[in-house]
Image (cartoon, rainbow, N blue to C red; front, side, top):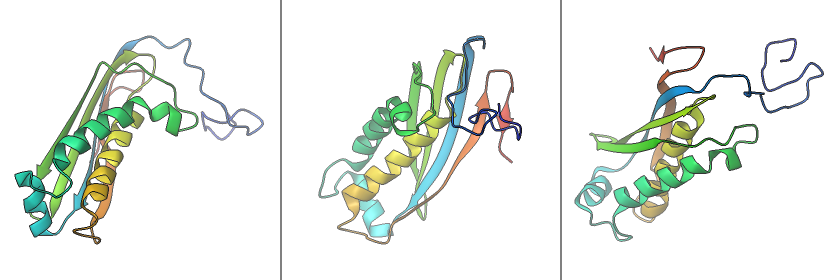
Length: 158
C-alpha cells in the first residue's frame, strides 16, 4: 500500500494489483443500480417487445451478464473472479428504465466492479438498440447500493 493509503499503488507510487492471497474466501454480494432515461413512446415499444431491433430487455440482460464476466479484462487492476450468480433486473418507470444487478461470489475479493460493469453495459446495450428511435436517451446514476462480505463488512448507500 502506498503512503497515502491507496491500495492500488505501491510505496513508490506505481500501479499494482492488490495482493489478496492472504484473504479468506467468504461469500460476497454486491448490488449496483443505474438508469437510462427514455422517451415514453420508445419505452413503450421496449416494454411491449416491439422495438425494431428485437427484444431489447433480453439483449441487455445477456449483455450485462456477459460483461460482468469480462470485468477484469476491462478494468486494469481488477482481479478475475468466479461469479456464483449474477441477476439483472430492469424496471420501467415514468422516465425510463431502472437497472439493478445482484452479483455474488465466494472468494477473497468482492464483486462490486462486476455489478457496476453489468449495469453500465445493460444501459449501453439499450442505447445501442434504440438510438435510431431516441438519440436523447440519457444513461446515469450508476452506483453501488449495497455490498456485504469480506473484512470491511456490509455497506449500504444512504
